[in-house]
Length: 407
Ligand code: NIG
Ligand code: FE
View 1 (tube, rainbow, N blue to C red):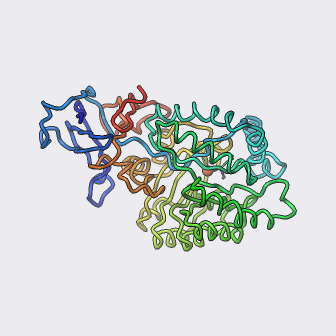
View 2 (view 1 turned 45 degrees about the vertical axis):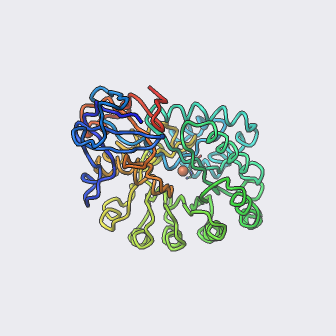
């Protein structure tokens, strides 16, 4: 057993009250007691029922402490870069136009297919290290740059290798991103392959816990997306979708009705989408660095989502095309200044709500008793200062299962 003290402000993210500010569970002059890698007790130091004087104590030096962040939407395993796409976009070509002439996601698919598993693993490691330094202790990783049976499985196997290596917890998701170029004239064959072979194999080998589909112009149609999610559901996978990102497809309603755990992006989501998500208990995953990097002025309907009681998570969308960033704090700050979340909502969105978007029922994203002892230790004077910066680095130390993994 060991105890952490010197915590000027603790955010447990486990407050039971109604408002986001109360749900932060703010405690001043706090202590966290850890046993076997999990939180045994957290709260005000003076109220600790355990004999703090007799336990090994780590004084964090008057810092703000919150649960390790959960980045619930990344495309972290890929090869190559998209600097040429970026340059073309800055000259005025749109993301969709670049995709139509064979650039965009297809560029990353070409380089990812050529890379060995070892090369993909080696490329992914420093990305995880960068997230770790920012306090991210749980990372969702989507496939989607393989686009063949073999190559999608390889991407998920790389995620499994990264999970074994640690220290972060990895949550793999099978993403059906676009129709592979070689199937352009026979899309249905690709969807059939996905439904009849890829999804069953991924589920049987437990290579992913969820299936995600990108429904948009230039990606999958609403009908194709529905077939893919239905197959995922039939094989026991949780459902997610990239929806209403660059155009309004209306698929968010169908995805929610199919039981989607989370729907992501949502810049074009309408009232019907919000209502369907509220009915289904679907989490909205907001990705402001992606819309900002694409220069897209549209914003998701945050006020309506809040009003309807839809939980909102915030993630980096780390990927080489629309969001080449390793900075969850930038994403959270933009979620406030650009999308209209409060800092309390954004902080919950990167912790407890993000864990919900991933169906993690082990207390992750909180510091309640029983949760993994994953801590992000911040060098800021108050919790409000966590998001008060653009590209600042608030995290001084990251701890996983009670051990320091980055400083
Ligand atoms: O989340 N919209 C689709 N997928 C990614 C972009 C991936 C890419 O451009 O490589 C996204 O923004
Ligand atoms: Fe994405």
